[in-house]
Length: 298
Image (cartoon, rainbow, N blue to C red; front, side, top):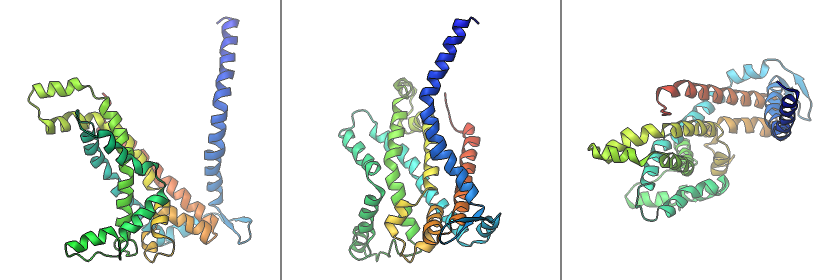
């Protein structure tokens, strides 16, 4: 290789690092360093007035013996599972919204997309009025058919279901947008050929639409599962810390918040954060491991 060629490559490398450097610095400062700091703090105990001491595996021993942790894990898994159920619904809705000749399709897309741009606190305020046991719209509609509605967000038996329904509803818009993009990438010639072979709309949906949407569906399962395990703001704004059902409905992130900021036990809270990271990592790895069996990239 000539010396001029070598100098050109070195100069290109410098420009590449110049552009990549700020991004990598941000990743290190805002992602890698907090993870390493949290991992270190999980082996320490913090005093009431600051300062920390090395505690070894004490926080993790407490994590294993704490009865609230399995309940929080189960609540988070249930919430995530319910929100994941919105993906098949989003597939169906996206296919309807992308039908040729559908009138007011833009209006339906805007209506489904609106929850994405709304703040979780605003969504929670609206749904708190809907779930209100005295004058809420949901209990009013139930009373019209002779059903006495429960205390949706203050009853331990109903609170998690109520929060999960709101999470499913608010995640539909994002899923529909992603799936709509996937639908537009499907060649219309495939549907025309299927029609000539006598395949009806249902058969086309099962044999063409769903298989060719599997990359988008796989992406949504990853993102939805990660977002599900980050449940906090919607739960906090919808129910509130003084809610009698919160102890039976709290998520892992809410348990982290409670230990870190209410109990000021930042070492134990860091151990909970590491647990959340490990669970998300395992679930994501399992999804990537089995995606080859059902995701079609051709």
